[in-house]
Length: 282
Image (cartoon, rainbow, N blue to C red; front, side, top):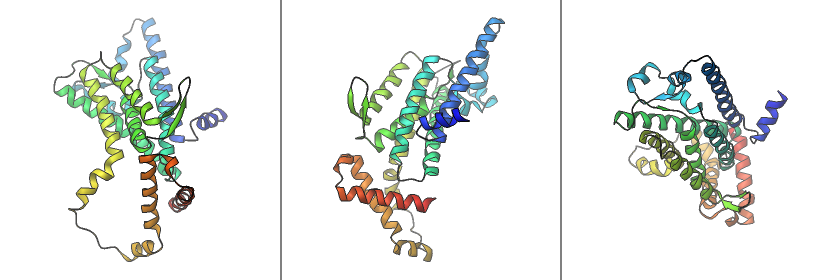
């Protein structure tokens, strides 16, 4: 238990992030160990792909539907696992920072939703691309689509947040995310076209998640407005709704111009609003 607590603190205190990283590592170790044993006993280790990785064949997917979930925590290559875990570790913590106005429970749920949503979007894009003849007799595995979704959210939610890179210095997180995304996409240059489509599916999910309010806001103009009930009117009169709107304004200013663009008064107001909303959400 002491090791688990230390590992969780290393992951920024996040139960979700530490669990996702741990699951990827444990499954990777189990797969390598089992594959080594099967080779020594003259068995085919690729049989595991039928049970953990997502098949390009739709008929085979129907027989193994759980692979749409298991593929996103399955890595057969040490290098593949290393990059995915490192990027998940870094960008998972960045995303938790970008959602500082949420309660702890909401931030944890949001991280898990983006990881799973990016993986599902990538998996479904892979199946559709395979149906169009982009791949045949292949399998998809790895957390890349999920991690790319998280990278996309971070790049759009906090583009001007600065980090310090070894031997490079201060870099805005949007450039770091873009470079990591390009490295991942270039790294699939020799893979099937469907694999690249899966990565693009994860990126698309992250972009949609970040911009969904701006995308759906015009559509809300055509939906009938519900009358505000008495309880909602009381909350509005108490200033809760205006607090949320003001917090959105401050966060939009940070996303556009960086945290340094806030005045001293606005920084104090941001801290006060975040604390008050977190307390109300508990």
